[in-house]
Image (cartoon, rainbow, N blue to C red; front, side):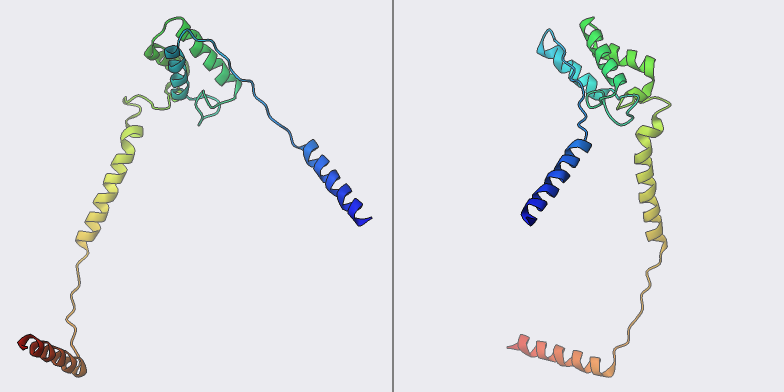
Length: 164
């Protein structure tokens, strides 16, 4: 009797978990390429371009509709015979520097590229300045009579060992 109740409860819980969990499925892009080089260029471009909606995902990893549109656009531009730099320039013109995972070095991105190195250098300089500025205090410690006697005894013992 108790065994059948436990089985029923387990079955009800299992049914509840299965019915309340949802599986999110996304469509898979299938593109036909002329050759492996074009396919590799497509994959590399999708890894270098950022999804404008997802903020921290590239086009290859994003499932958003705009990422799918941009992947299709990259595919179309590749089939038009555009070079990688032309595709990147097109995307930057349309979406701004944000679309690039590695933004170009220009007057607007100097702080992005060189800021971390400057901050580390400043930190090292501050540490060096603090260490050099702090005086080293040297105190002469006076040995007690007992410590002096013990030290003398050890020194005499060492001298007698050296003579042998």
